[in-house]
Length: 401
Image 1 (cartoon, rainbow, N blue to C red):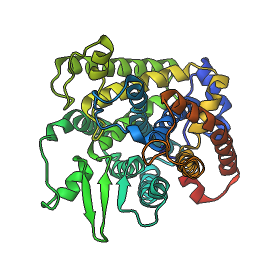
Image 2 (image 1 turned 90 degrees about the vertical axis):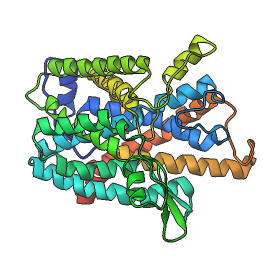
Image 3 (image 1 turned 45 degrees about the vertical axis):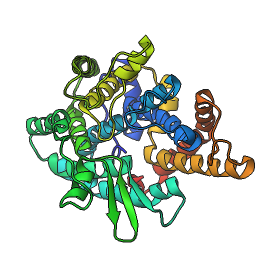
Protein backbone atom coordinates (compact mmCIF):
# COMPACT_ATOMS: atom_id res chain seq x y z
CA UNK A 1 0.00 0.00 0.00
CA UNK A 2 1.17 3.55 -0.55
CA UNK A 3 3.66 4.69 2.00
CA UNK A 4 3.22 6.97 4.90
CA UNK A 5 1.89 10.47 5.30
CA UNK A 6 1.63 12.69 2.27
CA UNK A 7 2.67 16.21 1.42
CA UNK A 8 0.12 18.79 0.31
CA UNK A 9 -0.30 20.66 -2.99
CA UNK A 10 -1.19 24.27 -3.28
CA UNK A 11 -3.83 25.35 -5.77
CA UNK A 12 -5.54 27.32 -2.99
CA UNK A 13 -7.88 29.02 -5.39
CA UNK A 14 -9.45 25.72 -6.47
CA UNK A 15 -11.92 23.43 -4.67
CA UNK A 16 -9.24 20.76 -4.53
CA UNK A 17 -6.78 23.24 -3.05
CA UNK A 18 -9.21 24.26 -0.34
CA UNK A 19 -9.90 20.65 0.44
CA UNK A 20 -6.17 19.96 0.69
CA UNK A 21 -5.80 22.81 3.18
CA UNK A 22 -8.62 21.41 5.29
CA UNK A 23 -6.71 18.13 5.48
CA UNK A 24 -3.40 19.75 6.36
CA UNK A 25 -3.48 18.54 9.93
CA UNK A 26 -3.56 14.97 8.72
CA UNK A 27 -0.77 15.60 6.19
CA UNK A 28 -2.69 13.84 3.41
CA UNK A 29 -3.93 14.68 -0.09
CA UNK A 30 -7.65 13.98 -0.32
CA UNK A 31 -7.72 13.04 -4.02
CA UNK A 32 -5.00 10.41 -3.55
CA UNK A 33 -6.83 8.85 -0.60
CA UNK A 34 -10.08 9.01 -2.57
CA UNK A 35 -8.62 7.25 -5.61
CA UNK A 36 -7.08 4.62 -3.37
CA UNK A 37 -10.43 4.23 -1.59
CA UNK A 38 -12.29 3.91 -4.90
CA UNK A 39 -10.16 1.05 -6.18
CA UNK A 40 -10.31 -0.62 -2.77
CA UNK A 41 -14.09 -0.78 -3.09
CA UNK A 42 -13.69 -2.41 -6.49
CA UNK A 43 -11.26 -4.83 -4.86
CA UNK A 44 -13.90 -5.63 -2.24
CA UNK A 45 -16.30 -6.70 -4.99
CA UNK A 46 -13.63 -8.80 -6.68
CA UNK A 47 -12.63 -10.54 -3.48
CA UNK A 48 -16.27 -11.13 -2.62
CA UNK A 49 -16.31 -12.95 -5.96
CA UNK A 50 -13.33 -15.03 -4.83
CA UNK A 51 -15.18 -16.20 -1.73
CA UNK A 52 -18.85 -16.17 -2.76
CA UNK A 53 -18.69 -17.01 -6.49
CA UNK A 54 -16.13 -19.79 -6.48
CA UNK A 55 -18.27 -22.02 -8.67
CA UNK A 56 -17.64 -19.61 -11.56
CA UNK A 57 -13.94 -18.86 -11.27
CA UNK A 58 -12.36 -16.92 -14.13
CA UNK A 59 -9.07 -17.54 -15.88
CA UNK A 60 -6.52 -14.94 -17.00
CA UNK A 61 -7.46 -13.70 -19.52
CA UNK A 62 -11.03 -14.90 -19.10
CA UNK A 63 -12.50 -17.72 -21.16
CA UNK A 64 -15.00 -15.88 -23.35
CA UNK A 65 -16.90 -19.06 -24.08
CA UNK A 66 -17.80 -19.64 -20.43
CA UNK A 67 -17.78 -16.16 -18.84
CA UNK A 68 -21.07 -14.21 -18.99
CA UNK A 69 -20.85 -10.44 -19.57
CA UNK A 70 -21.80 -9.49 -16.00
CA UNK A 71 -19.00 -11.59 -14.56
CA UNK A 72 -16.55 -10.32 -17.18
CA UNK A 73 -17.19 -6.64 -16.45
CA UNK A 74 -17.06 -7.28 -12.71
CA UNK A 75 -13.61 -8.74 -13.18
CA UNK A 76 -12.62 -5.97 -15.61
CA UNK A 77 -13.49 -3.26 -13.06
CA UNK A 78 -11.15 -4.89 -10.54
CA UNK A 79 -8.25 -4.70 -13.02
CA UNK A 80 -7.88 -1.06 -12.01
CA UNK A 81 -6.87 -1.97 -8.45
CA UNK A 82 -3.29 -3.26 -8.57
CA UNK A 83 -1.88 -0.73 -11.10
CA UNK A 84 -3.35 2.19 -9.15
CA UNK A 85 -2.12 0.81 -5.82
CA UNK A 86 1.42 0.35 -7.13
CA UNK A 87 1.58 3.70 -8.96
CA UNK A 88 0.30 5.54 -5.87
CA UNK A 89 2.92 3.75 -3.80
CA UNK A 90 5.63 5.30 -5.95
CA UNK A 91 3.96 8.71 -5.82
CA UNK A 92 3.53 8.51 -2.04
CA UNK A 93 7.17 7.56 -1.61
CA UNK A 94 8.21 10.82 -3.24
CA UNK A 95 5.82 12.79 -1.06
CA UNK A 96 7.06 10.98 2.04
CA UNK A 97 10.63 11.98 1.22
CA UNK A 98 9.63 15.61 0.79
CA UNK A 99 7.95 15.60 4.19
CA UNK A 100 10.50 13.56 6.14
CA UNK A 101 13.92 14.64 4.87
CA UNK A 102 14.53 13.69 1.26
CA UNK A 103 15.66 10.59 -0.58
CA UNK A 104 17.44 8.99 2.35
CA UNK A 105 14.32 9.07 4.52
CA UNK A 106 12.18 7.77 1.67
CA UNK A 107 14.66 5.00 0.83
CA UNK A 108 14.89 3.81 4.43
CA UNK A 109 11.13 3.79 4.82
CA UNK A 110 10.66 1.91 1.53
CA UNK A 111 13.15 -0.76 2.61
CA UNK A 112 11.55 -1.28 6.02
CA UNK A 113 7.95 -1.12 4.88
CA UNK A 114 8.64 -3.25 1.81
CA UNK A 115 10.19 -5.99 3.95
CA UNK A 116 7.25 -5.71 6.36
CA UNK A 117 4.77 -6.20 3.51
CA UNK A 118 6.63 -9.23 2.16
CA UNK A 119 6.52 -10.79 5.63
CA UNK A 120 2.86 -9.87 5.95
CA UNK A 121 2.02 -11.60 2.65
CA UNK A 122 3.66 -14.82 3.84
CA UNK A 123 1.85 -14.78 7.18
CA UNK A 124 -1.36 -12.87 7.89
CA UNK A 125 -2.41 -12.43 4.27
CA UNK A 126 -1.90 -16.07 3.33
CA UNK A 127 -3.73 -17.14 6.48
CA UNK A 128 -6.63 -14.86 5.51
CA UNK A 129 -6.97 -16.68 2.19
CA UNK A 130 -6.47 -20.23 3.47
CA UNK A 131 -7.32 -20.25 7.21
CA UNK A 132 -4.48 -22.76 7.49
CA UNK A 133 -1.25 -22.47 9.46
CA UNK A 134 0.40 -24.99 7.15
CA UNK A 135 -1.06 -24.36 3.68
CA UNK A 136 -0.02 -26.52 0.77
CA UNK A 137 0.30 -23.40 -1.41
CA UNK A 138 1.57 -19.94 -0.45
CA UNK A 139 0.11 -17.31 -2.77
CA UNK A 140 2.50 -14.46 -3.58
CA UNK A 141 0.01 -11.78 -4.54
CA UNK A 142 -0.38 -8.02 -4.58
CA UNK A 143 1.06 -7.28 -1.10
CA UNK A 144 4.12 -9.34 -2.02
CA UNK A 145 4.47 -7.42 -5.30
CA UNK A 146 4.07 -4.03 -3.63
CA UNK A 147 6.56 -4.97 -0.92
CA UNK A 148 9.29 -6.04 -3.32
CA UNK A 149 8.57 -3.09 -5.64
CA UNK A 150 9.12 -0.77 -2.67
CA UNK A 151 12.41 -2.49 -1.85
CA UNK A 152 13.62 -2.07 -5.44
CA UNK A 153 12.42 1.54 -5.58
CA UNK A 154 14.47 2.24 -2.44
CA UNK A 155 17.52 1.84 -4.69
CA UNK A 156 16.11 3.20 -7.94
CA UNK A 157 15.00 6.52 -6.47
CA UNK A 158 18.65 7.57 -6.22
CA UNK A 159 18.80 7.70 -10.02
CA UNK A 160 18.36 11.07 -11.74
CA UNK A 161 14.71 11.62 -12.62
CA UNK A 162 15.28 11.18 -16.41
CA UNK A 163 17.06 7.87 -15.77
CA UNK A 164 14.29 6.67 -13.44
CA UNK A 165 11.70 7.64 -16.05
CA UNK A 166 13.67 5.70 -18.66
CA UNK A 167 13.84 2.61 -16.43
CA UNK A 168 10.11 2.74 -15.74
CA UNK A 169 9.16 3.18 -19.39
CA UNK A 170 11.61 0.51 -20.56
CA UNK A 171 10.13 -2.06 -18.16
CA UNK A 172 6.48 -1.21 -18.81
CA UNK A 173 6.87 -1.04 -22.59
CA UNK A 174 9.51 -3.73 -23.00
CA UNK A 175 8.67 -6.57 -20.63
CA UNK A 176 6.36 -8.28 -23.15
CA UNK A 177 9.46 -8.93 -25.27
CA UNK A 178 10.32 -11.52 -22.61
CA UNK A 179 7.06 -13.46 -22.95
CA UNK A 180 8.64 -16.16 -25.08
CA UNK A 181 11.19 -17.04 -22.39
CA UNK A 182 9.94 -19.93 -20.28
CA UNK A 183 11.79 -22.12 -17.84
CA UNK A 184 10.38 -25.43 -16.68
CA UNK A 185 10.27 -26.09 -12.92
CA UNK A 186 13.62 -27.43 -11.80
CA UNK A 187 15.64 -25.73 -14.56
CA UNK A 188 18.40 -23.38 -13.37
CA UNK A 189 16.90 -19.97 -12.68
CA UNK A 190 13.29 -21.17 -12.99
CA UNK A 191 12.31 -20.00 -9.49
CA UNK A 192 13.78 -16.54 -10.02
CA UNK A 193 12.13 -16.26 -13.44
CA UNK A 194 8.78 -17.27 -11.97
CA UNK A 195 9.15 -14.51 -9.39
CA UNK A 196 10.17 -11.88 -11.95
CA UNK A 197 8.07 -12.58 -15.01
CA UNK A 198 6.64 -16.04 -15.65
CA UNK A 199 3.73 -16.79 -13.33
CA UNK A 200 4.08 -20.28 -11.94
CA UNK A 201 4.71 -22.57 -8.99
CA UNK A 202 7.91 -22.85 -6.97
CA UNK A 203 8.49 -26.04 -4.93
CA UNK A 204 9.32 -25.38 -1.28
CA UNK A 205 11.49 -27.62 0.92
CA UNK A 206 8.71 -28.55 3.38
CA UNK A 207 6.39 -30.31 0.92
CA UNK A 208 4.57 -27.13 -0.11
CA UNK A 209 4.78 -24.72 -3.02
CA UNK A 210 4.58 -20.99 -3.74
CA UNK A 211 2.37 -19.53 -6.47
CA UNK A 212 3.83 -16.36 -8.01
CA UNK A 213 0.48 -14.77 -8.81
CA UNK A 214 2.06 -11.34 -9.31
CA UNK A 215 5.38 -11.57 -11.20
CA UNK A 216 7.41 -8.58 -10.08
CA UNK A 217 9.14 -7.07 -13.11
CA UNK A 218 6.24 -5.06 -14.61
CA UNK A 219 5.22 -3.72 -11.19
CA UNK A 220 8.72 -2.36 -10.63
CA UNK A 221 8.23 -0.31 -13.78
CA UNK A 222 4.86 0.94 -12.55
CA UNK A 223 6.15 2.03 -9.13
CA UNK A 224 9.04 3.84 -10.82
CA UNK A 225 6.64 5.81 -13.03
CA UNK A 226 4.50 6.64 -10.00
CA UNK A 227 7.56 8.05 -8.26
CA UNK A 228 8.49 10.13 -11.30
CA UNK A 229 5.22 12.08 -11.21
CA UNK A 230 5.67 12.87 -7.51
CA UNK A 231 6.94 16.43 -8.17
CA UNK A 232 3.60 17.25 -9.81
CA UNK A 233 2.15 17.15 -6.29
CA UNK A 234 4.73 19.46 -4.72
CA UNK A 235 3.44 22.47 -2.80
CA UNK A 236 4.73 24.88 -5.41
CA UNK A 237 2.84 23.27 -8.30
CA UNK A 238 -0.47 24.82 -9.33
CA UNK A 239 -3.39 22.42 -9.04
CA UNK A 240 -4.71 23.30 -12.48
CA UNK A 241 -1.35 22.51 -14.10
CA UNK A 242 -1.18 19.19 -12.26
CA UNK A 243 -4.65 18.20 -13.43
CA UNK A 244 -3.80 19.12 -17.03
CA UNK A 245 -0.72 16.90 -16.84
CA UNK A 246 -2.77 14.02 -15.43
CA UNK A 247 -5.38 14.40 -18.16
CA UNK A 248 -2.68 14.54 -20.85
CA UNK A 249 -0.95 11.41 -19.52
CA UNK A 250 -4.24 9.56 -19.06
CA UNK A 251 -5.59 10.44 -22.48
CA UNK A 252 -2.28 9.59 -24.15
CA UNK A 253 -2.12 6.19 -22.43
CA UNK A 254 -5.69 5.33 -23.45
CA UNK A 255 -5.08 6.47 -27.04
CA UNK A 256 -1.95 4.34 -27.29
CA UNK A 257 -3.86 1.42 -25.79
CA UNK A 258 -6.53 1.76 -28.50
CA UNK A 259 -3.94 1.91 -31.27
CA UNK A 260 -1.93 -1.07 -30.05
CA UNK A 261 -5.02 -3.15 -29.36
CA UNK A 262 -6.52 -2.36 -32.76
CA UNK A 263 -3.29 -3.49 -34.41
CA UNK A 264 -3.60 -6.81 -32.52
CA UNK A 265 0.14 -7.12 -32.25
CA UNK A 266 2.69 -6.22 -29.61
CA UNK A 267 1.41 -5.31 -26.16
CA UNK A 268 -1.02 -8.15 -25.43
CA UNK A 269 -0.32 -11.88 -25.85
CA UNK A 270 -3.99 -12.76 -26.50
CA UNK A 271 -5.44 -11.28 -29.70
CA UNK A 272 -8.99 -10.03 -29.89
CA UNK A 273 -11.53 -11.07 -32.49
CA UNK A 274 -14.96 -10.27 -33.82
CA UNK A 275 -17.72 -11.84 -31.73
CA UNK A 276 -21.22 -12.95 -32.58
CA UNK A 277 -22.56 -9.63 -31.22
CA UNK A 278 -21.06 -6.14 -30.79
CA UNK A 279 -20.96 -6.71 -27.02
CA UNK A 280 -18.92 -9.88 -27.42
CA UNK A 281 -16.54 -8.01 -29.72
CA UNK A 282 -16.05 -5.32 -27.08
CA UNK A 283 -15.48 -8.00 -24.43
CA UNK A 284 -12.87 -9.68 -26.62
CA UNK A 285 -11.16 -6.32 -27.19
CA UNK A 286 -10.97 -5.65 -23.44
CA UNK A 287 -9.94 -9.18 -22.47
CA UNK A 288 -6.39 -8.44 -21.31
CA UNK A 289 -3.66 -10.34 -19.47
CA UNK A 290 -3.01 -9.38 -15.84
CA UNK A 291 -0.47 -12.04 -14.73
CA UNK A 292 1.97 -10.55 -15.57
CA UNK A 293 0.23 -7.32 -16.67
CA UNK A 294 0.61 -6.78 -20.39
CA UNK A 295 1.52 -3.40 -21.83
CA UNK A 296 -2.07 -2.98 -23.04
CA UNK A 297 -3.36 -3.85 -19.57
CA UNK A 298 -1.15 -1.20 -17.97
CA UNK A 299 -1.95 1.46 -20.55
CA UNK A 300 -5.69 0.96 -20.04
CA UNK A 301 -5.63 0.86 -16.24
CA UNK A 302 -2.99 3.53 -15.59
CA UNK A 303 -4.57 5.81 -18.16
CA UNK A 304 -7.96 5.45 -16.50
CA UNK A 305 -6.34 5.94 -13.08
CA UNK A 306 -4.69 9.22 -14.14
CA UNK A 307 -8.01 10.58 -15.43
CA UNK A 308 -9.80 9.52 -12.24
CA UNK A 309 -7.19 11.24 -10.10
CA UNK A 310 -7.65 14.47 -12.07
CA UNK A 311 -11.43 14.17 -11.70
CA UNK A 312 -11.28 13.50 -7.96
CA UNK A 313 -9.15 16.60 -7.45
CA UNK A 314 -12.10 18.66 -8.71
CA UNK A 315 -14.62 17.15 -6.32
CA UNK A 316 -15.60 18.87 -3.04
CA UNK A 317 -14.50 17.39 0.26
CA UNK A 318 -17.98 16.19 1.16
CA UNK A 319 -18.17 14.14 -2.03
CA UNK A 320 -14.87 12.44 -1.22
CA UNK A 321 -15.56 11.69 2.45
CA UNK A 322 -16.58 8.05 2.03
CA UNK A 323 -13.73 7.23 -0.33
CA UNK A 324 -11.10 8.94 1.83
CA UNK A 325 -12.32 7.02 4.88
CA UNK A 326 -11.26 3.79 3.18
CA UNK A 327 -8.25 5.22 1.36
CA UNK A 328 -6.67 6.57 4.54
CA UNK A 329 -6.35 3.05 6.00
CA UNK A 330 -5.54 0.82 2.99
CA UNK A 331 -3.55 -1.92 4.67
CA UNK A 332 -5.98 -2.19 7.57
CA UNK A 333 -8.86 -2.37 5.09
CA UNK A 334 -7.07 -5.03 3.05
CA UNK A 335 -6.59 -7.34 6.01
CA UNK A 336 -10.01 -6.63 7.54
CA UNK A 337 -11.99 -7.29 4.37
CA UNK A 338 -10.21 -10.57 3.65
CA UNK A 339 -10.84 -11.94 7.14
CA UNK A 340 -14.43 -10.69 7.08
CA UNK A 341 -15.21 -12.27 3.69
CA UNK A 342 -13.57 -15.58 4.51
CA UNK A 343 -15.18 -15.72 7.95
CA UNK A 344 -18.64 -14.95 6.56
CA UNK A 345 -18.25 -17.64 3.93
CA UNK A 346 -17.25 -20.23 6.54
CA UNK A 347 -20.27 -19.27 8.66
CA UNK A 348 -22.57 -19.50 5.63
CA UNK A 349 -21.25 -22.97 4.87
CA UNK A 350 -21.91 -24.07 8.44
CA UNK A 351 -25.40 -22.59 8.58
CA UNK A 352 -26.72 -23.22 5.07
CA UNK A 353 -24.36 -25.83 3.67
CA UNK A 354 -22.90 -25.79 0.14
CA UNK A 355 -25.26 -24.76 -2.67
CA UNK A 356 -22.85 -24.85 -5.64
CA UNK A 357 -20.90 -28.09 -5.53
CA UNK A 358 -18.61 -27.83 -2.53
CA UNK A 359 -19.09 -24.04 -2.26
CA UNK A 360 -21.57 -21.61 -0.81
CA UNK A 361 -22.21 -18.96 -3.44
CA UNK A 362 -24.61 -16.09 -3.97
CA UNK A 363 -27.11 -16.67 -6.82
CA UNK A 364 -25.95 -14.04 -9.34
CA UNK A 365 -23.68 -11.09 -10.04
CA UNK A 366 -26.21 -8.56 -8.75
CA UNK A 367 -26.26 -10.35 -5.40
CA UNK A 368 -22.46 -10.33 -5.39
CA UNK A 369 -22.39 -6.54 -5.73
CA UNK A 370 -25.13 -6.30 -3.12
CA UNK A 371 -23.09 -8.36 -0.67
CA UNK A 372 -20.10 -6.07 -1.17
CA UNK A 373 -22.32 -3.01 -0.62
CA UNK A 374 -23.62 -4.46 2.65
CA UNK A 375 -20.08 -4.83 3.95
CA UNK A 376 -19.25 -1.15 3.36
CA UNK A 377 -20.89 -0.03 6.60
CA UNK A 378 -18.96 -2.28 9.04
CA UNK A 379 -15.72 -1.81 7.11
CA UNK A 380 -16.25 1.95 7.01
CA UNK A 381 -16.73 2.15 10.78
CA UNK A 382 -13.68 -0.07 11.30
CA UNK A 383 -11.49 2.07 9.02
CA UNK A 384 -12.64 5.30 10.69
CA UNK A 385 -11.82 3.83 14.09
CA UNK A 386 -8.38 2.74 12.92
CA UNK A 387 -7.55 6.12 11.35
CA UNK A 388 -8.41 7.85 14.63
CA UNK A 389 -6.41 5.31 16.59
CA UNK A 390 -3.40 5.81 14.34
CA UNK A 391 -3.67 9.61 14.65
CA UNK A 392 -3.59 9.35 18.46
CA UNK A 393 -0.73 6.87 18.59
CA UNK A 394 2.89 7.87 19.11
CA UNK A 395 4.16 4.39 18.24
CA UNK A 396 6.60 4.22 15.34
CA UNK A 397 5.36 0.80 14.22
CA UNK A 398 1.89 2.23 13.57
CA UNK A 399 3.33 4.08 10.55
CA UNK A 400 3.74 0.68 8.86
CA UNK A 401 0.02 -0.13 9.03
